[in-house]
Image (cartoon, rainbow, N blue to C red; front, side):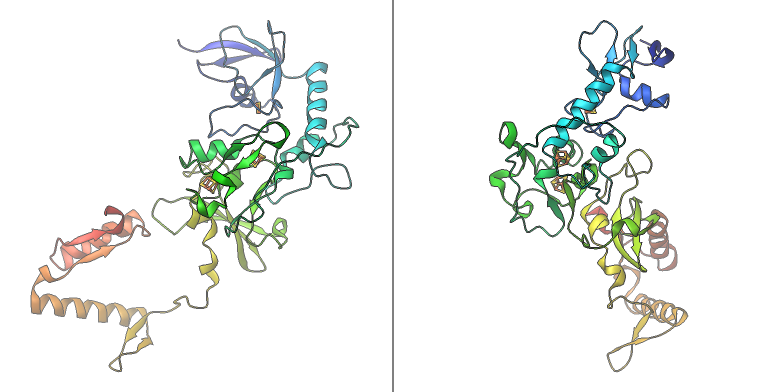
Length: 355
Ligand code: SF4
Ligand code: SF4
Ligand code: FES
């Protein structure tokens, strides 16, 4: 079937089979609140914050899972929807930690619950004590889980399954005790977790957060976008810089850069090397005393070339091998093989990612 027309808030909207009401509404600049939605994941429809009115449907329906069909008529604003959102948010907050202003606390990535309840007249409900278990003895170095701030949207577990294909975490227990667990409620280091941190990134409330530098004022950091240099994939990263030091690395939002909001453990967490005292800052050449001495790039390159040419002269080009790195760009890897073949006459060149 080719495209067809539906109606959202009285506006005709072109749709294709498979489009959801949420995608189509957002494409028109119509704001529908969401909590469990992440464009990288299959829609789950579990948080109920995106409910809208669909003509012919008795109940409100989730915009994130409802697929467009020809002639569909949708209302995203009405008294009924407002009432639903007010009751829903009030219920969410009934067992959620709140600040003195009665709103959920901020987190470095923002708290969607706080954002959604801003300016909303909430119901005065009794507070509930949900017995959700955490993993206080989880000694993994990077990821903290605060069960009180979890709204059970399952974004973290679905991300771990659908994007990482790791399944280290899952919804466990029942009813009010439902929580995010691991097998045997062990720490993440005892599971298949790859410490990619994607679950932190997708969590809308800060229930999952970074342990590293959590005591710093991360909100005050200046953010600079750059390319991760751990490998040649070219993931874009946002460096959070406080007082001249990188204190956190996050991914740009999904759908904006090549890595689609994802990072690996190295890209996200292994940034301490940037300020290491042991980093090389100038070329070193081994002297006759057997020790390394600082020198200029010109001298280092000339000595390297002379050494390689000497080996070639004495033992032939087959005695030389060139190994490049997946941390280099494609262009740099091309140049290494060109150097091997054109300058030294050997085809013995390899790259670590090829093994
Ligand atoms: S860090 Fe990555 S692999 Fe580990 S639980 Fe979170 S999403 Fe899964
Ligand atoms: S930890 Fe965060 S992402 Fe996971 S279910 Fe709870 S609120 Fe959702
Ligand atoms: S965003 Fe639609 S139900 Fe959660």
